[in-house]
Length: 151
Ligand SMILES: O=C[C@H](O)[C@H](O)COP(=O)(O)O
Image (cartoon, rainbow, N blue to C red; front, side, top):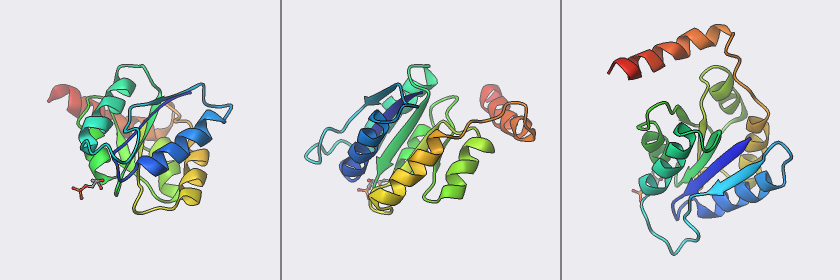
């Protein structure tokens, strides 16, 4: 799996922690870091999150992990990219269902909300989930795609 990561300066420490963890994970073939490189870079979260979400939409990455202060701004931004389904999830069950129910490709976390150990556990679990396109959830997600394509 190829993962894009991005963060603003409120999320960079957690982004780097998660990127390090994923680079050591056999399930992850590649981690592409869209920045910011450190907390002296004060670019706004959409500038980083949109680039990472576009990489997923264009097939250059399979999923993305985006971090800002709350995860909310990253999720709003990523969801503006056609074809992207992004969520904030700070608990195990929501992270699981974001894949299994919603086929989300983008997980957003808040560096000011969640501690690194819980975030690592959630991302580790999240990497293990796959969406089943033959499941009953697929036709529900298809309504979102159809709306997007008709709009
Ligand atoms: O959702 C936005 C993020 O939490 C961001 O890191 C902080 O945004 P703010 O500086 O506008 O509060």
